[in-house]
Length: 304
Image 1 (cartoon, rainbow, N blue to C red):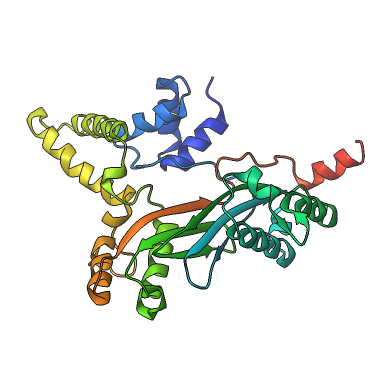
Image 2 (cartoon, rainbow, N blue to C red):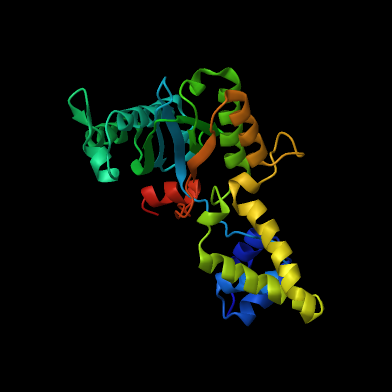
């Protein structure tokens, strides 16, 4: 039995019609991942990457040092969107990011053990839980120290956050044009959601899986088998232009790719400029949201 929720979830991820989604789930015994491939093979969905479930409340925030050599991206979750939007909570998340920048915490436990003013981050969270009245959890963070330069971008008040590292000539971080370029790249990552920087980073098994889907898609379109392989190569190039940052069209100038803009910066600065790596957090991705509504919560607390 295919549930309406499964059909709804598949439809949200692929954009395919409701009946097509239901048929795909029937054909794949309710497996969402396989149903996505089924729809793509039939030409009914164009999704090149799988969307995570965006569920929990909270904030993604960042800290960048004045010299742009140290940066932190952090996600802290709470129970309601109301609390997440308050200056008190957002300021608290910023404080945690700044604390993380002061050392080199290896994981969340190490960051929770870091101190400020004699209190650990764990203790600070406990105190904030007591004053705010909601459970708060430090979910994840990325901390980077570099010889190049870092920039961050926070979108929609903390719904999406990006931390990106650049290799660049010494002193480049003081250049206004280079700073604008770094911020443009960070915004591009937030908007276009690439998975990798370069084609060489894409795992071989991911490419092989994509080729299989694209080949089945072309055959289902009735294309002659002798030209299908050439079509697949062309479509793989399009796939790279979606999942690889440097191959994406620059959102501020559709006549250029990101790698063209990077090359222009290197020429302007008289030295090598490259994008080293990035971290992109979308608040709550992969977490299960509370399903109970406000009325049900009140009734539960009243014991009814």
